[in-house]
Length: 480
Image (cartoon, rainbow, N blue to C red; front, side, top):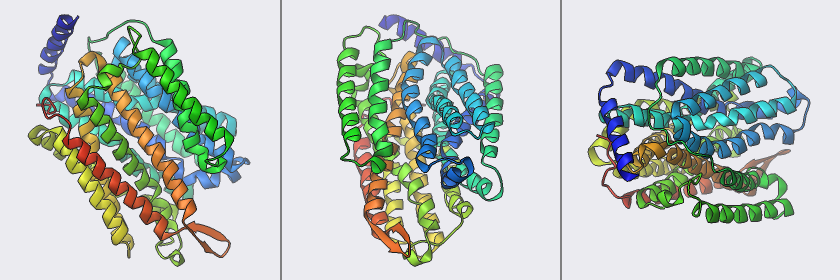
């Protein structure tokens, strides 16, 4: 089996070496557009969420499920579709993921019914697998000298989409109907689907086999039972019976999943591979970096929109609040080639460590320098730059230590770990900001001290990620 795998990888490397720059650029553009749309859709609703209960004639709790449903479905879909990509074709399952974005966007664009909207958003959650699938597909198709920059660009889309989505949604919130958001994602996803279908080939590295159905069910139960209380625990109460029961179910389900997977001949997730030191340490670092990025989203828009009487806010509009994140996203995009050059020069593990340090510096700036809106933007941008560099390294580390026919699954798990980090940031950040408050008239707002505690935790998380990265073995972590 090992001889056959090695021969398959040699054939793939030989095929990739013959790919011209023109074809590489077309593949990167098609897959990059798909990744951007998926990332964009994840943040589009955040600026308009507070207005939706009135527009849809429903409760704030029901509207919150427009985010929660997407989160839960995406958490389950990413590792499952990654495994399916390895089994039946990365390009094929990537098309399924992008197709889900088209269908989900059309459903949400055409309805005002909250139940239908939640269903549409849940379908959109399937598309979250597009980014790890796209990274894995490019890592398989492209020659070595172009892999690092291409994977860095696709990985950076996770941050770019969020940074672009907030100002775009803010503009729509002030001037138009929220349905416009979903018409945009529907059209863009359809263009990406067509481009991938006609321009991007399917590599011949499928593993085949049968899906580990019981493993998929156990993992789905475990992830939903973990992420649901993290999403709504501050509303239900962290000590409430439903939250405690769900955490217990999550723990038992993860234990049962691990017990089953290590004994299954064709597991959904190869736990032995995940325990390989470079992969394990990369995933742990990803958890902390994912935490730091999401905290930047929740700790910037509401921060600058707070009234000046809060002692820290600037009373900005939703649009201006979104624009404060725009430089962060643009620099992630611009610096992706720089990150790729560092990966190929000093190694992905050292580059990841540098990214974590830059993230920490950005958070220190947010704590200490915040008298003007420009200073807040600079601090947020530094966080974004560091996150973009760090995100660029993760697929490089995964790809350098994973066989081609397991890439989609391995990158899917890495994306899931980042999402778990973001969910932890949302839960912890929401709790901190709800605990440390100030009262302004009839309004209760987070205090400056609450934000600074959150920022300090993020800086610490970034430093932990940097230290972990230094212990990732340096062998085979460059892509050229």
